[in-house]
Length: 164
Image (cartoon, rainbow, N blue to C red; front, top):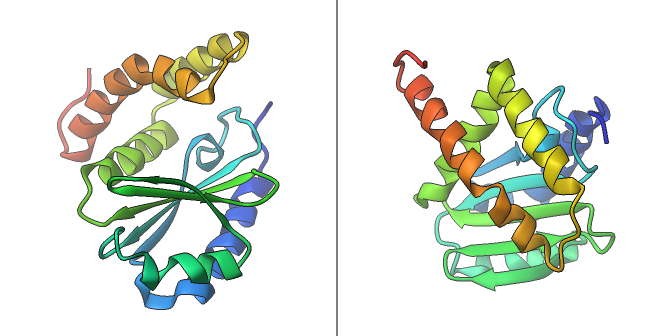
């Protein structure tokens, strides 16, 4: 599927709902994933990164997000994932100091500015989308090598080094 310019405004509305539901417990609410990168083809699923002080302190956010219409789907060490019943919005909740937070943001920000890596990532996603996956985790795992490669350039860019 191609890029849809409405994804950004859809995220804005969702972010407002999340912030209204949990207040200052949400330290950040960021649009991540392919729908956050203008020009990048994606499935129409909005991925959201929400950071909190302590992801294990579910009392501070879980019931509030459930009341706002989100359903807990994943509970694992250091990570919670909630989604809408229609499964088209995913909220990934992490503690603010979790290193994966910078991975998501570095990848997003780099793909927004680097046309070559955006095209590389799009090509990999397109090739993988042609395959049948028994579990979408296998699809995500199949992207790991290219994401690691792109993240290395993103990190050099982030710290102001020259990217080759």
